[in-house]
Amino acid sequence: MINPLRGMKDLMFEDSQRFVHIITTAITVAKRYGYSYIETPILEETALFRRSVGDSSDIVSKEMYQFEDKGGNDVCMRPEGTAGVVRAFVSGKLDRQPAKQKFYYYGPMFRYERPQKGRLREFHQFGCESFGEASVYEDFTIITMVGQIFKALGIGFELKINSLGCPECMPPYKQNLVSFLTDISEDLCADCNRRIETNPIRVLDCKNEQCQSLLAQSPKLIDELCEACDTDFKKLTSLLDDAGIAYEVDTNLVRGLDYYNKTAFEFVSNEIGSQSAIAGGGRYDKLVEYLDGKPTPAVGFAIGAERIMELVQMPGREREGYYMGAMVPEAIEKIIMLANRKRTSDKVTVEYSSKGFKSHMKGVDKAHARYAVLIGEDELANNTVWIKDMESKEEKTVAYTV
Image 1 (cartoon, one colour):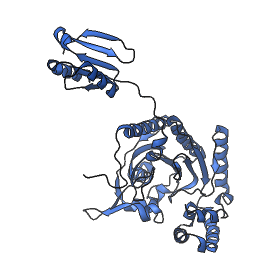
Image 2 (cartoon, one colour; image 1 turned 60 degrees about the vertical axis):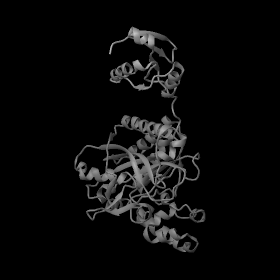
Image 3 (cartoon, rainbow, N blue to C red; image 1 turned 90 degrees about the vertical axis):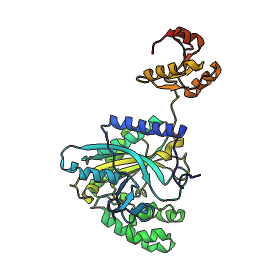
Image 4 (cartoon, rainbow, N blue to C red; image 1 turned 90 degrees about the horizontal axis):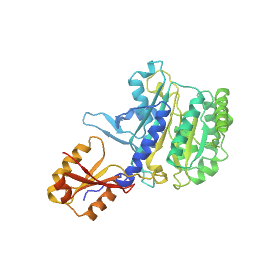
């Protein structure tokens, strides 16, 4: 028997229904905010993620499914969605148009990491990216959209926010942080010591408990923001306060990707164990420029579908469509023809074998059909069908022609 690869999972039955419910709910909310669908390739040039996500990130340095294809190209399976959408935005020359653009996407992502609850090597994300709007009002709007998606799915959450500053306030903060980290480097883990040299901000994201206790005393960027960044962050907190949205300012929230600046946020849940982040995003005003486009402000988010599967409250399933069956062999073809005609407008489940009444009624329940349609000896002789509405329990016999 050939089984799925480690960290890969088949979706079927209740899991697949839950997945579809997550995606369709998120799409419904995104459309209300003016987002349109974009589809980008699963396979991209590795350079795309090196330049956007960053060589020092765990994604690029440890986790990408990277290989050389038959044409000698260095390619990888996408580990996240934003970079591909930005690449499409630039290659489609949308950065040269005055109109603001808003896209939503969903699909599989791939990272080679240790599989655990809610985290697989092939996983699915739903995300939104907004281009051309520099206002902090858009940051607030993106955050409220994520909140509405989770509310529609029946998921409770806590919101964490931070500011990552800009090219004006980040460099002097990095110097202060490196000085602090160098003094305590002997007590930090190997990854943190490597990051001091490559990307010191990422040290704040270390999950090692000892490192986190030491970092509690680290310099806080939020205390060293330039006037513009400080004004925007205060406006964001004011908007959240006015909207009655609870939040926590987490000064160590840096996200795991190099392209973020200014607003960063995460939605977390205490119901899925230690891996508590269920969505995250922020502003990335320089990424379009990094990928050879015209400078374009942008902000977005992504939701991990597998992370929230167990948290989703599925709506009560209503009976729908028809179940059709024959109680004598001679009626089977008539049932098939009747079903073929009815499928132009309705969902129909057909039983190809003649069965007794009780067996057919079990089939009706299994198909969760609204209507049971059967042909027995009497119905066959009189060119009629027996129909029962499984909700109202009304029964009737009607004439039919095929």
